[in-house]
Image 1 (tube, rainbow, N blue to C red):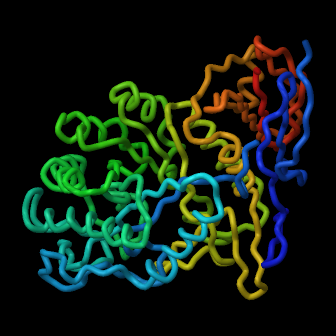
Image 2 (image 1 turned 60 degrees about the vertical axis):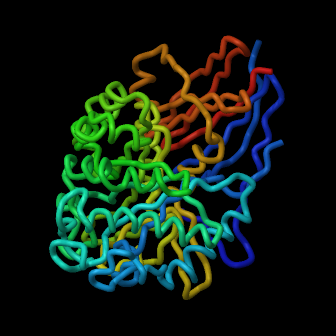
Length: 437
């Protein structure tokens, strides 16, 4: 089941209104067909924003694989002063106008962060924005200084269009050889190389700039944790410049969260963990896009629940909208997306992934804190996945995922309010919202 939208119609989600004390509201989506269906009840004993209030957006610096073609912002060899740096048509005519439109539609500010896939080819060891190469030279030299200043020029140019960035990552998938095709745009870094680049070049460049943009390291699979963090954040100078660690989800199945996420948090509790990329349908020989696939929505919510319970502070979808093929993508690395656009019919489809994300983004605003949650029965904790959050306005949120094929009865006990007897239907996700006063 997909939800079909066009230029004049789309199902909408009303603004979140906190329930009266002693009552709760429940939002439920299910494989059987419910999509964020609202109901309410009482314990025994106004916010306004459009859509699902997703507000964490990642933007490529120049091209990524999901561009129409490979490009950089300065293709003039030897331009160490970046005098020929210029935003691409994709930025000026597409990315920036869309960001302006999105910002105008929401009451809450968007948190933007940017990631580079590749430098200009003349800075790379292989001489091409395509393919795997390293940055020429070594940290502190003219190539690394120029590459650091490239970040600043990017922030400068976007600022001229009234777009500011909360953060940048030092490099998208610096160890990309594990997953990506050989023609993929990238720059390879080791942890030590990234540390030295931050200490001698990128960190000081950001600190000198007028931008209050934070720096995120790694931006790659969690199998590299906690090693990557030990190498970079273990250096006090590098740690001073870094705000957090970015993580991708593609190899999560082979890397237990306790050994990677929790271990990193315990070593460096002052640096946040952020999931910076996730998508479904990757590395499939057929059907990158599968309309109405409930299982791909479940994979989103399972990941979000898992990482929120292991000290991660946010989760970013890779592509919010793609075409019917799962692109555009110039290296044909097609994947699935929460929204699929059929431009030939002037409609778009809202996938189960969209609604699974909404069970979190709509109800857990920035500034929320995870709360301790105890399961009274071992069998319940095995069958239902869950997370509890305290919102900045004092309301409580509980998200419950049932990935099994049968209903599960359970209760919610809040000592300050009372008890709810309820059920998680088979293959469903629920969000409960209540306040204590």
